[in-house]
Length: 149
Length: 149
DNA sequence: TATTGTTATACTCTATAACTATA
DNA sequence: TATAGTTATAGAGTATAACAATA
Image (tube, rainbow over all chains, first blue to last red; front, side, top):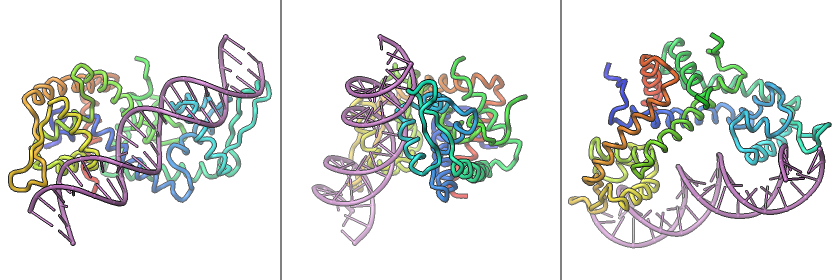
């Protein structure tokens, strides 16, 4: 009942503070969950992008991830060193790189996604109700999935 | 109706992605809202901490903000240069600094808080319903305000 | 000896500019 | 000339270690 619905002067009710610290906690849980698989949350995100839609170039993948193309280079370098993704030139336009998950990449993605699901469950645990957890995810989706409005 | 309640393989349903990008958007809106007052979101947070509870040392303030004490030094240096806060040694323990808002600091805090409220309103706008906005804030509060559980 | 504030340093994440190779 | 990938570099933000003043 003492929970505040308005921004207010209390730091712990400011949306900026809440989003930042929720993300910090999620990062901790994700890092712990993914440690056994030798990847971090951003690398999992890259692999998810590659798994869904098979982008035809590094730049396409970078755009869908919301990162710079120069950032994508380092991310893919790391994943390629771990032999989770492979790069080879596009057949018709040799400037572009086609990036694919390797067999090991697909298997790691499967396991890491399950581990990440478990980390999400832990973050949402204090909400108690599954309905509240769904509410939160949907509200964030509504806010995030539309930079143009 | 097509909105997904489960983590799933779609990047835009992962909690880590959603929290990160919600925060990025909040940061943009906050930066724009605070620009006229010459401070950023982190400095507003510092001033809020100083305004509520009057911490007796820089370290106390740093703890309540969740940042390192070395980080607090630079933050306070900036605010002191802008003459929004003042530092002077604690009377009983001269190792400590008592940090207070100046008169200009209190006025800036008042205006900047209102501007920040408006930025929050813009972020939550796509939710439509005020009830949904309250739900989101309360859910984040529940997750964040209890690192020990 | 321990604590507060400070400085120097390093590490991560990210973005900008310039280079190469292809088109 | 324009584009994809790459490299070098610099800018935030943060944390660790060491130091001075004080307890």
